[in-house]
Image 1 (cartoon, one colour):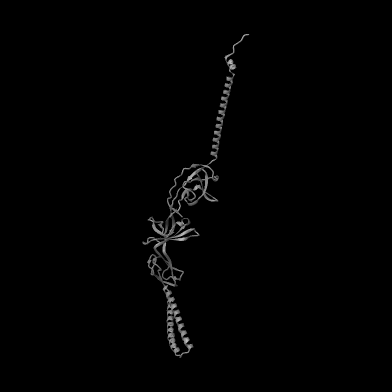
Image 2 (tube, one colour):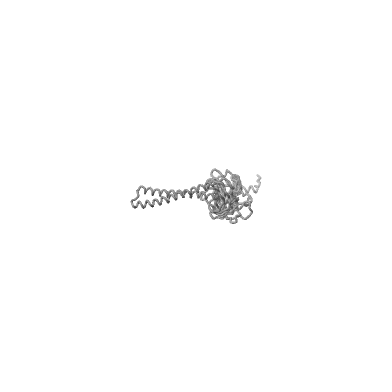
Length: 403
């Protein structure tokens, strides 16, 4: 029987079975490790992709808002109000008696002093009444003298029991009646003399004649017809109505500037003399009286002027774009974004409106980030992303606000 030799590897496999099993186990473990590693890598990739997808989804769901910022407003400002110059004292002069104008001695533009004769009224019937009253006074005086002397004689007789008491009482009563008649006659004469004095029209104060409404021969009716208009031109007085928003900031003694509208000269300096203690309930404004010196008389009463009043505010207002305001049933508020990009609604108190910008007096700080043109879908506490908008330069106010 012929025997063939075994191959070397077969002999080795038969000879060392434990070694072969060990090699197989190691190969299996290596393969398993490779599978686990591949699975872990795949899981990490899926988790990374899921997280990236979630972030992308959240980013797409987060609203974007346009950020806006405030800027400091004016702490002091100037308001310009219209007014008309008028005399410190103005009056229309009327007659106190009826008659015809006899003569006028002053006309428009004349400077007069207190007590100067302006015109005379001719009242012939009044002269007759005064003459009659004086004659009646003389009669009463004569009757009184007779009654006095008679009473004196009866007084002597009454002391000697030579007079009847009844007759003595009658004499004394006649004397007392004569005294009363004298007082009445004197009062009537004084009344007629006062009326006689009304024939002379005199200036009640120093000033300038601004209007003459009668001429010689004109029929004058007492109390209903203007004869002259008299104005005191130094100083001049102005009355302005300050709106309620600035009413508390105007004080007596405050300096103001007055400029004639048609004049290019330097504004005149005046001072606030009186400030009303209440607002007018009709126009919601406060009356302010201003005194303007006019020693040279160049300023004419009746001129239209503009009064500039410097107003110093007690707060530091902020100017914001007008599109940040939200007005609803709860009032006026703005939408802000805090440090964590969350939405917050804040009520504000408005000041002046400049069109593109609005003044805010209370409610926000200078560092707050505002939302321009906020959407109605924004809710309190919502997280948003901010987009900075390019700010256009705001032109400086060329002229003060007019109220």
